[in-house]
Image (cartoon, rainbow, N blue to C red; front, top):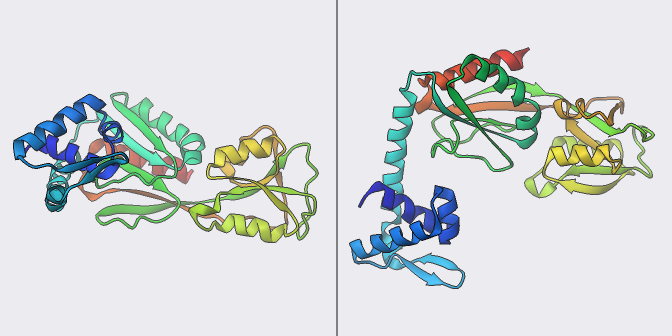
Length: 283
């Protein structure tokens, strides 16, 4: 069984549909279907049960799943090791981060980096999803929480300051009040956020009007006069229609962590980007 076939088997097992598996591997639906059918014919086993809800592993498919995952781990380890030994300043570097960090903090870092290393293509992946460093979904990641994965080299870069913001034509509230005020906050289904709890404590009479899991959306909502928001300073300070509100104390800061898989620590392009990020953000 070839590794390319194993990748397709694992993608279908994880995604549940041929379309989703194809998107995860950047392959067409017909290609996934054809390769999966050929794999089952070659092994003489039916690996998936076709249902109205998608593809479900059969008993035979479940029996080989763990072996396929071990094969994947070995293949990815080889890929990471080879990528980590590359000393040429060329190729692609995949960087993941929260959406607001990629939009407002990374651009000057990337601009400085690509100006110095024109043969390296940088791919920025943003969102709430934590891209896997072990599976090389990203080569380096910036997060607001420490990494818990094994074999990740990480460091705390900076403490990110946050501020309270409101539309410029809005009368700033007083601490301890908030009656008649609206708040734009983070979607709490993602977990607790110290800055949001702090804002509610500072303005206990205010009403939450809009929730979003995207800081850029929160900034635009606040700019439009929807309500008061707590934002990372690099986001809020750059919004022309926002004013920073003084509630007597600053919101809690958040630590920004940078991490990469230890197998890539010898990669020249990774080291160059790490140095650029540290030098730029420390300023």
